Image (cartoon, rainbow, N blue to C red; front, side, top):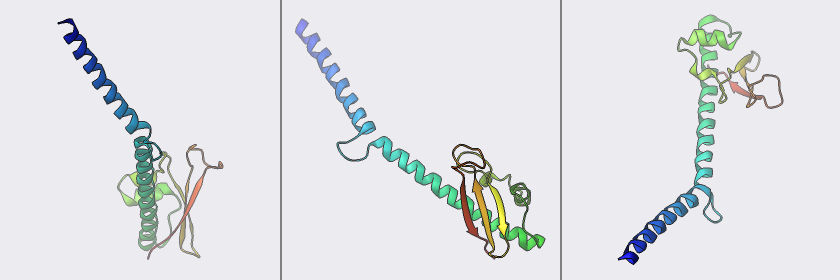
Length: 135
């Protein structure tokens, strides 16, 4: 009778160890391929890049619409946000800092600047995007 209890306890431990091995395998690697965590991180980065691209295009379109309605370009992101009337959820970079804009009237391009991961403008990690203004 005693060996029966030990056998079931051993089986329980074996099941837990196999479950733990599966979780560790999924989380940290599969012998040469990408780990599950790396795949999730890559998908998150790609989604953030896609959202950023959409926001940059939206900013350029709003600048074009602003110019059509006001016969001039906006002087700041705050002015563009007020014009949009939607609160400007699209006006922040992936790190939560508001983009800044400037417009080149000759090339009809809006220069959109992100403060980058350190969230401090004017540092080495700042990112600038040039978007053509439609219209």
